[in-house]
Image (tube, rainbow, N blue to C red; front, side, top):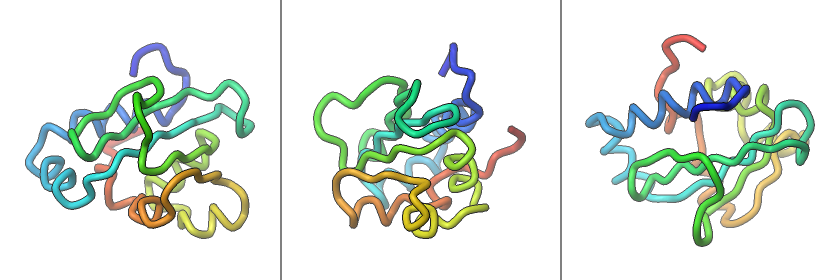
Length: 122
């Protein structure tokens, strides 16, 4: 996730490494969905960086997904970190307009802090 100024990129790099562990492999079996994350530094839709969390193959990559992801999320760097670390409930964030979701709502509901490794330090 080189060349990114986003704090989210650090967390996604930790997740990429986590995917190679046994816990990461269990996650791919359990969730088996593909998420595209459009993360903006400050304002939704402006200067977004795109990441793909592929929980079918067990990989995290930078750049848009080739094909159709199960769900696409748009949020700011700060909101993404709050959700991924469990400080903000994803449903509440959606209601408040902090997240925009495209695609399957049932897939989106499986996008919880549980899929992320516990961050060592960000």
